Image (tube, rainbow over all chains, first blue to last red; front, side, top):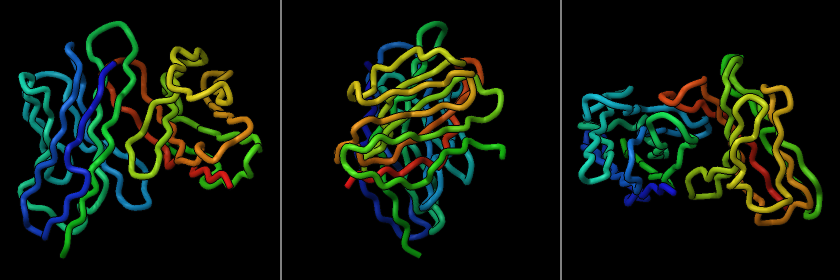
Length: 116
Length: 114
């Protein structure tokens, strides 16, 4: 079974600082990769996703993530964070390709606090 | 509404009580997932439906947990004889037919067993 590791559980930054959140997964086949965000009091929503093609994907609100297949990683980045980026961030993986189930597996999440 | 709707938003149950949690997925979405999210953790998979068929229930923690989706739309997660360790947020998500799609989540039901 696949697993997802998010190594940074709590991150505290000042506004305008750069952000990188790590995500590593264990699955040998084709994968679909996601980052979800959960703002305080709100539901999980998609930030960005990778299915195939350009390994550098851009999402909403200036976020981007890079898929590095050789490292089984899909790290999330933002050059300059804002106070409104304070939220929980979850990396998720599900097997791609045809056949089988495609149940997203989530990491335990990273809590990001941005100080104004 | 256009999103996934879950009810109730909050539920307090006495230990030993049965509870039922409801999920209304986005209309037309074929796949439906239930997750359990403990405090400080990521969502943990419970069960998955494709239309009315429950294709995977490997994540259900015990036989006290039961889920159904009889008409392929609304789903109910039932927990019998609740215990304190069942306290968590229960998330429902739905997605359209196909592999290359993301899941859309509801706001969850926060269950507290006292």
